[in-house]
Length: 187
Image 1 (cartoon, rainbow, N blue to C red):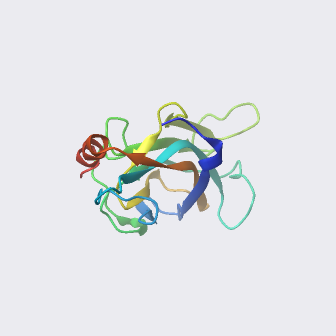
Image 2 (tube, rainbow, N blue to C red):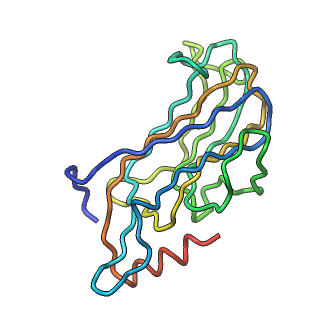
């Protein structure tokens, strides 16, 4: 599982908050990167996620979220939720899905726009990445998808884009490791 820069590539996805409260899901298909079934002499392979970067910006621009924007949400990158993509307000994520004690969690962030919470001296928003993998211990995905899930608690008065970028590599897995990962990545 050594981190090898020659085999690293990036995947990304995003979801828009809209201007209403509720849950939303963006699905990223990984079927071309994972092979959870070992066949003959061919071993299974998983997608190692070493690092995750979060970016929250005003929708439709390159601008940071404006100081006058209100709203708060929690977002998480989750392995194999089995749920389809849905705009904010159109999905229903069960309680405590976006939580550190969920074995399917890869990374998570809490966010509050400047006008919603106490901002710092520059009026910047509150953003706390509370879970992330590392180059030493990557999260290894062996299912066909990851989902970017969002739960908007306080509606944003201006829509924002929540973007995530993953630093990834493909790993060959022995049968015992593959079977253990398949068991832990089951809904």
